Image: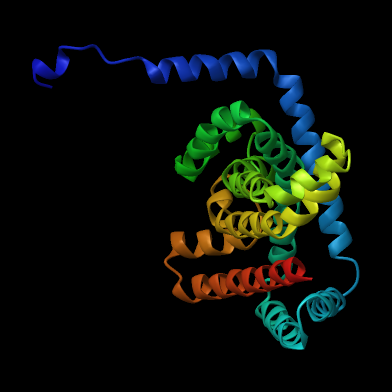
Length: 279
């Protein structure tokens, strides 16, 4: 390193971060263990529930949901697509991937929607949370895996946590955006009728913002699917492990099959959530 490069000493940012992580692991280990136990218990329960009966039963159920929510074409695609995944022998991994996505999206929705509502009501909150969301979306997803492994060990839990952090911002942003875009005249009309802030929010703003909120949920689902392969690096089960194994073994055929299974699942979830948005 040149002398001019040494004029200002390097900030020990890495040491500060590691000290903070050490502090958390030392004093909040019980908290992290509780989260690990809870997520593992829910994961095992969902996997067991979805694996009840032969695969064709769940495939038909998903196809019927697609028919009801969207149309018969998407239902037929779901039937053929998931049938192909089962035929390729990746049904257990598909169930594990669906479970990971369900948990990640539900937790993102439970946390993200209230945050988005809070942002829509307070400009100060929006100015504070927006940079945090920017940080969450622009930080490379691989970086989230490091503290997740330190706090929660290997397995499905760090995969779920990293997926939540990476995929939650669209739900928060679009909830905030949808509520703020509600016609101001409608808000003023509700105020004129003597509505309280809670009534205005629950009976006017949130119902009118629901299409935008559901668009955020759709984006969260898609981002969750994009994290499946990355989460497999820390032991998260599912279709990501198939793709990761194919990469390490340079097995083009296996990688193509795993990728096709992920694409089919992504298309089905995308069409169903978009259909639910238009209902």
